Image 1: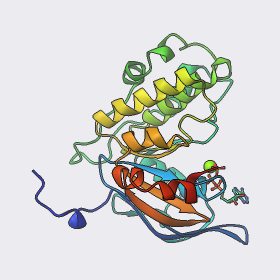
Image 2: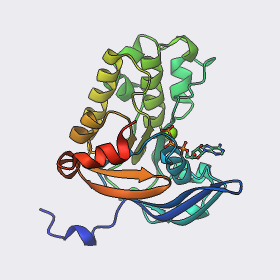
Image 3: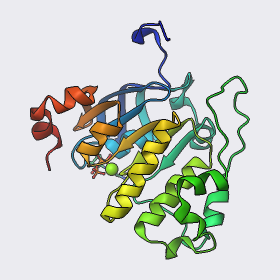
Image 4: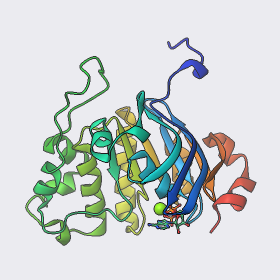
Length: 249
Ligand SMILES: Nc1ncnc2c1ncn2[C@@H]1O[C@H](COP(=O)(O)OP(=O)(O)OP(=O)(O)O)[C@@H](O)[C@H]1O
Ligand SMILES: [Mg+2]
């Protein structure tokens, strides 16, 4: 049993007072978020509030950010995107961005990464084609199809598989099920439950609050570039005014 109080556990990801700018336009003012190893946290907020920008900041894709952004003790504000990816952060971008003229196999192998990060870190597992197909059997039968020939749901599975092939310590999904048919959404949620069972740390953005309340451990709500609330699923469920104030469309 872990006898340490929560406050003394070092988060895997810690964001404090994050500010970010597109050119001269500031869009993040004070984003705060933390995630412990093995936790799933959601990032919620209405359209345009800064969820994707927060994710881009974590990945080193915002040219101008300030504040504190630490992953596993590494100061992400000092690192280039390729270095950040190699620390073990897998990204499933909004809109999926599958390479249409590569096959499913090529899309997956293009990101495969051999885990050599830290032999002392027993939480890392090496992902390969077989482990991705165990999660998404549908992709196995599409192996030699071009990315562009897949349905939206299959492309999302491929996008998740591609992120997992980097053998990440943290998986970040931006709009996990947006625009997908209900049956495909179901399959994506099942995959995320499977990853949760395996102890994967996940940051997830999605509009389906009810599913997120069951899947995620904690939630962070962003409003106009500021974290305005964070709490557990039961705290969110018990506070319907939060949904109408910050999450209704
Ligand atoms: N490339 C860009 N250049 C300038 N402004 C941008 C750019 N991308 C986003 N923005 C602005 O930054 C703000 C935050 O956008 P962001 O994409 O982070 O929001 P979001 O919460 O992910 O929204 P959505 O739910 O629509 O995906 C918005 O006002 C948006 O118009
Ligand atoms: Mg977005």
